[in-house]
Length: 359
Image 1 (cartoon, rainbow, N blue to C red):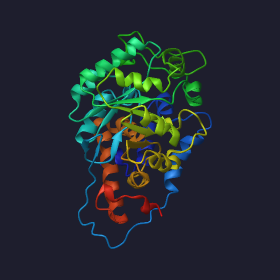
Image 2: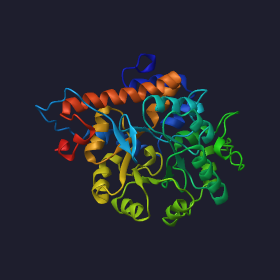
Image 3: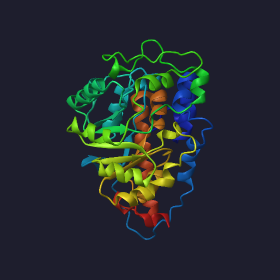
Image 4: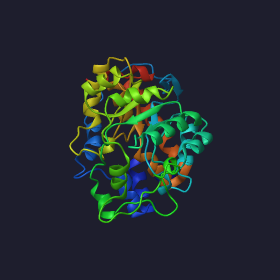
């Protein structure tokens, strides 16, 4: 199922590393500073034992669920990640086709190498749009209107990046987009280039000059006022912030530390998911990303109260090794591993993954 002979996502990453340029691999793989949170995102899931139930009829199992009322084949969505054409020529078009054929949602990054209109046109399933708020609010409003008109079904507002985390691998490589690649969603506004700076990361310079560091809770209400789409808030690790998002009208939240790429030392998402789910008490949907590498990790997230998980880097490894089919293989591998873990844990349905599984 996975390309290149890989039998799990860790092996797939090693294959992707061989195929990607050194700059592209470092950009996708790196975290900030000492990468403590990057490592902990993976390790924290592994430390959660699964107290499986015995003598449960699991002869038939169902991995399907819904997110914001939309049916999906599994509680695994494609996380928003930037610059897919660093991984393969078709970039986000390959990703959205893979997500569609796997029966799940792709969340398209604002910083994609493909316009939102093209991605939604290529989709055979739901697409959500991840939004960064630019200092140029008129350009941001225009982008929201374009995403809605293109057919995106939800907006995912990222709130953990007033500045870009210090990603030292990117600084060393002076990360930039190679010729021919741009932030396609923002070219019309004049914000398409991520050029090579002197002694820094081009993306860090882009974020520092283009995105709005004054973003506040009032802007959740502002965003809701300019769109009919449901708004999710992405980048929360505190129960009180989750309650604030709910109070400001968010339809859902994504528990996330930006894949360990922002504040190094932020808690792993597995550590904070349970308290956040308890805080919102099912009144809005809770999603989570960060370090999901096995189907059993998905099961753990469900048990802690997540509606679904978002997976980012593994999809990029699939794109790098096998294009659309590689990305599809990643999603199908996670679905198959989840199905297997459900059987061994005594869960016939996704709803059976309750907190008791964690002891």
